[in-house]
Length: 107
Image (tube, rainbow, N blue to C red; front, side):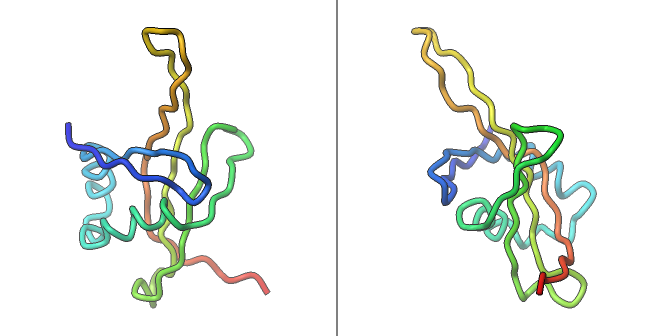
């Protein structure tokens, strides 16, 4: 399975699989040319922790080229850990889904 590994601005390693990208494009095919922008959103965007699911984060970043209908990309990342064969905890952080959205700027 093809996957891309990226690091966010907070130092976390996150992977994004071709399967997840295909999942996004199933319902939002217009986003296909924005793959690199999705990676950039995770690398350099801001994030907010989900209030109900504490290991889930919403990454978001503004892109003017999405206007007039949208102005941000949003990417959902789940943070998990798993044990390796030596009993050490390893990060297992991955993209679940993403979309474009218009977010009204706070004043």
